[in-house]
Length: 512
Image 1 (spheres, rainbow, N blue to C red):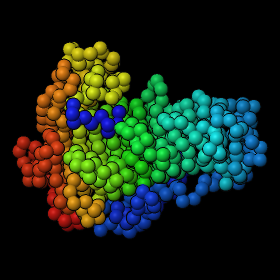
Image 2 (image 1 turned 30 degrees about the vertical axis):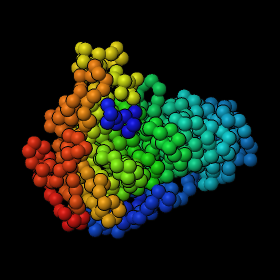
Image 3 (image 1 turned 135 degrees about the horizontal axis):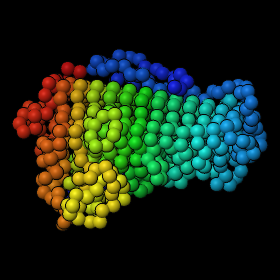
Image 4 (image 1 turned 180 degrees about the vertical axis):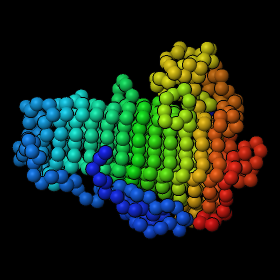
């Protein structure tokens, strides 16, 4: 799981919205961007974006009818009153700092249908002592207008909905400055209009042991400056960071979010995800890729504004002499799969604006990564793959529905009607930041692999229905096909045998 798998050797309340122009912001990882309404010089459409973190949550100033009032002056009052109340109780947290007992495992365990509503200024503070804020398996819990901060969840665990219970609704909350993930996700979870800020690992980690998470909605949130603990440095190659990480999610709508200034990737769907619609987001100034879709299936990526991503990580690899086209939208062993039920049977990438990012879109398939291969870091996750007779050679651990396959294929990717703008003076790169790519490595490992040589590289490039067409390019773009050494100009890219970008236009200068 994660980029480390690349192996060359082998109905919510109204959201607060503002207009963000495609080039009207300035931001760095140290100073999150302020959205503006200035039209883009490149002609990119203005995009609505959730500007949530600018103000703290402000819930009702008086307790809702029938609510249990929670006193911040009494440590553990919220946990105790939750325990003593029946299911479907509403709790109103008075203004002030609410705390739990000073035990690292102290937490609130809701009952089915419980609701937690914060007054203006209500904060639940873990005081760098408690690991979890809300846990347990209760269904249909609601949290609104509450700030949750200062909890110290361990790596790969979360603070709110720690046990990934189903049917939770989290709205108009600030989940910030915690360790681990600010938020976990269960089935049918709705995360709307929240500030997910400054958490140690993820803003949200959508993962549940056992059944896949389904029916997930992530809408109108500001997801900013997460992975403050820099886990990729502490655990190199872990693939365990980002604004949001999705694992085994079957059906997700990710729309209208402002995902910016995160250390690492902005959004990362990793391993056996399916049926995503990623639409109308602003993905901006993330250190790594704006979006990674890895060992997953069937997605629509549409109408997103994608600005100045991958400057840190792309430059790092380029400075090392790495020729791999690390991309702003990176598809790794992911494609359209008609045999898996979804709202599309392709990966559709259309009507997006990508401006001044480090590289564009890379379609990648590792020849040595397949079910039961020792080179595959996801061998325990072959849940949608089975071996084909003896071609996968090792004990079968996978199940339906892909009865005839043993590898994840980057296939049926349709990239069209996008605008790609690159001004190298803005990005401050002399080279290696200007690539679109479709490629694989030369298969070498293991020695019993049926995918040795150029078989996979030829398939992903020429035989798996991966198409660019009807796009607009501004700036000095180059194109990589089959392997990193094969760098093409637009004429070669459009010519035989690649025949990509039919109907596209190319202007040599950004904004031209």
